[in-house]
Length: 359
Image 1 (cartoon, one colour):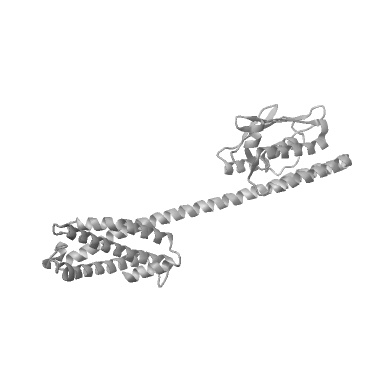
Image 2 (cartoon, rainbow, N blue to C red):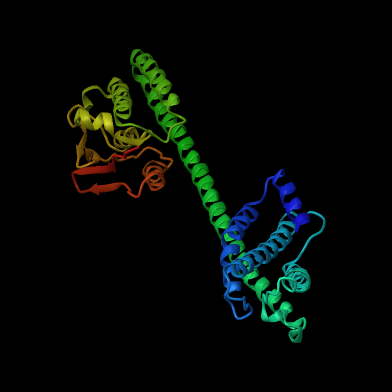
């Protein structure tokens, strides 16, 4: 027993496994209960006195804790692979051989050298006519109880570890996928911006210069938000206003926009990075804009949702698209909340609503 305690104490310097730590706690909690049950079981017939009963309980607790130590040490060897490797079958066989032998021998020693001298009858197994059978049976039953409890603890710990590993793996996959989605946003935006710049250079070089200046300011803000999953609604709206000013350089009176969002909502809510800007960008990309028939974009707040709507003026020749816009935004919302985006379309209006997040 001292050797087992020494080995487990030495193992603590090398950091015990979660199974070993849990088993030691369970051993400390269950040993007194098992010891008490042994003292009142049919195996025990203590003379009717408090000292004899307390001594019986102490012996039962000692037997139980000793059996626990043997099983914990065998499980520790199996998990760490120190000394040699054990299969479950070999561990069970060793557990019964060691514990039954130790308990039987200790009971006989106690019978001969302790209780016989005190004229105490600890168990019926101590009677000379019972021989070695009852001590062996007692050791077998005690070890069975401990093995069943230990295996339940080990299986529960393994199940918990598997669930934890699966959760961590899902989180890592989600983070990786979300990062991939975020990395798709900037190329998508730059592709459209460069197309616009190409058009401005041909038609209005002075406007192209202003556009480049505003684009650089816009990208500076965008890059600073690159490490965030969400952004304050106030900051996203500021980004959208900068973006719309860029578009006004190109389209002039052919583009109109309005914002109807209370200040308290701006300062408290969050949205995914580039969520609203992406919706505005899609509206400009997929609709025709003329001074006689301007594109009107409205950004409004209703009951915890931000709705971006525009009048439908579909282009006859739609610009090439990467197809990432709404799909990207939908996937990001699935990862950040239980809500998705809501899309509405009729002959005159197209709108997309996104939920304001608490963080």
